[in-house]
Length: 374
Ligand SMILES: *Cc1c(COP(=O)(O)O)cnc(C)c1O
Image (cartoon, rainbow, N blue to C red):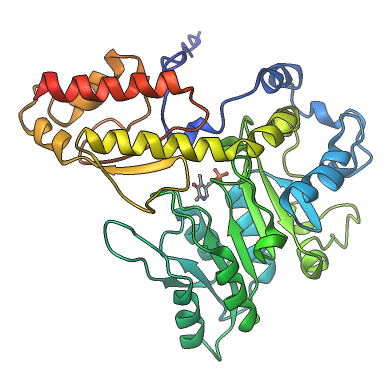
């Protein structure tokens, strides 16, 4: 007989500073929902034929009422992740010979979504170290260069997942509208953390990631759509009049959507507390700099995802017994997890939702590691 694998998770209970994971930690309500709705297709008990129309559990109200208001769009849908939202939009807008414009800090999923949708890609350049900035005017340059060609969509990663840089989205959207190119905001790292309303920023589409930033168990995401694109994006099957083609009929049809809904009230509250999160991130970055690390990206920083260059740790790694793995091991000894194993010279981390005491503890750990292993 096949033995059951052991499925213990060794990182439970650590102080987790992994940017990928901080915003996806479940609320108690979501954790309970995960168990309650874990059975396959449990949400479909009373389905009238379309996921969004399910009233019990209250998916209908969430998708038609709460979500569009939260995203600042006319319409919204729950997806299986940010990338699925990006792909649905690109696929719906795709044309033969068409292309998309991405910021140079775009996530790999924007690239693969465009490739899968059969679209060429042009990039808005990124400035050099240390800022890695995207100049909104870069969109104009690229769109000017591509004039006469079929640019179906522009994407702005808001913020990007490497440096946590926040670009002036209003400027980007006004440039895009001059060229009649719709704009999609990739809010995988913003929707559910910070206030972001597509309408206020002039974006036609916005995507978010439930497991990245909305305290949900993934894969799950959200997609906001402005009125002019409703019919194109949400067109229905000729054969099954309830089913939206780009969403393959039904998206998050299980526990994932229930965790998203369960955490939503808390997510609304925490978005309102964003100012405090930025303050904490800035304080943490400046303390890290006092220890010899250098913060890259926007300065002062406007997001909890922070990228550091750490020549001091790199130097230590050259002589340390465990080599480049020393940092991971030293942090692990202190119950801190989230900086990728093997990295020393460059790494990113997140301060999101961590109490000041924990952040102080992390700083003291870095201080101690530097002074004792040097
Ligand atoms: C994490 C991330 C994604 C992917 O999110 P999924 O919900 O897992 O598809 C996309 N874009 C950015 C910028 C990200 O950081």
